Length: 160
Image 1 (spheres, one colour):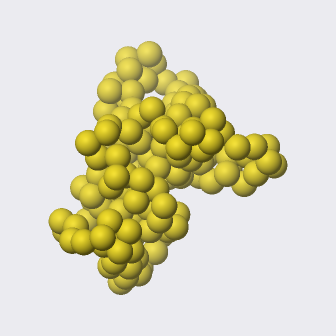
Image 2: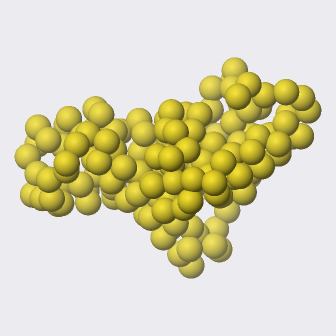
């Protein structure tokens, strides 16, 4: 079991990452909060030391991805529609970037992941490949296809 100080430090260092990643996967604030708590509970119960800050960060990304995937595959999730989906007005979206985020959220999951990790978290293709257990060339292909879809959906140019 980790100490309270370790958990607070992890919340400060990785809390925003986990929360944003949850929202990218789940598109729902309530489910994102549930998974956020689950991830940090797993962290609190995990005594395994990490080799570095980047190793710890990669652990948080992987555990968050897996928890989100598990929730998305659950029976309950496949038979319920959230209020956010009904109103199409997620509360965590900043109005200034709403159009871009909506376009990203409309992408297939495989494209959303790489776009999020590349643009929002600043990972390089090689790092994303390691995190997602894919080849580097696959990541480049996914990024190019995602950018093309975003161009089409936004009706013009996007910054690369």
